Image (cartoon, rainbow, N blue to C red):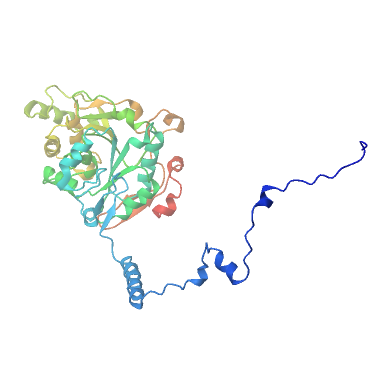
Length: 404
């Protein structure tokens, strides 16, 4: 056979073909042989709860909805990291104040004191005679923006009517949600000053910085800023100063002298005849500069215990008339040689000063519109602004939030 011819060789049947194939089922038998893996959801009937359960569920929903209209009895303070529930009446009482630990009120004074005495925070205190939240917003925001560590700032604002005014606190917290902030009433501080100055009529704004640590014992070392200031310096640098044995530090205003407020002959006669711990043993310097009370660094542990008593004594001896002078010379005489002198950069510059003279200042006067208190019960008047520096430190949306 030639090579070109072909031959047929039948192939071997494969193993698959050798296996016996089962007969295919047909019809009903095939359907029964296939296992059912999934059941059609439509085949299951919908759940039908009992009518009683429907009625109970509807009642629960209505009950929860009605609860939303009941007045709040407790709230959580935004500065409390533990988010403890605080009774609402504790805020309504002027003797109570918020603390980061959730403790409040006189019942927890010792707890608050122990937590704050060495807490590393920079405590800033301010007193306001006529409620003006815009001033407080500028003061707080300028302090925060000028600070190296704004998280360490802790504000204590003493405002009139704080025991009835919860709204002011929440407005400020909306502007400064991450800040440490407390609103305090003034009643206890005023009562303390009145009792110390009886039967005299005191100037609460001047004496408040020295009475506040007696009421709020947790404040051992703090900075007092007048509410009508714009802070450009770093508060943490100020509070870190060593006061040595002094309880107070203040900048001196040499545009005002001691003799501008008190007769030097009268002062010499008092110095020679009176024997009191708050009267100087040496003759008073007639041209001594007056300490500026707008910025004070106070260490309550070194502040003399009879400070208010000394002011009351000097006021009586000098027969000071409140209507004749805005500043009580008794306060300057009590502070005479009893305070540490701050740098002149912490002296509040007057409004008539040229703008270039404020460049190296740590604090400058608020130059925007502000409310002025009128006679008691007569409300307040609005004083127009004299500049626009305050606008740089006003937080966004302040007008809408504060309603001013």
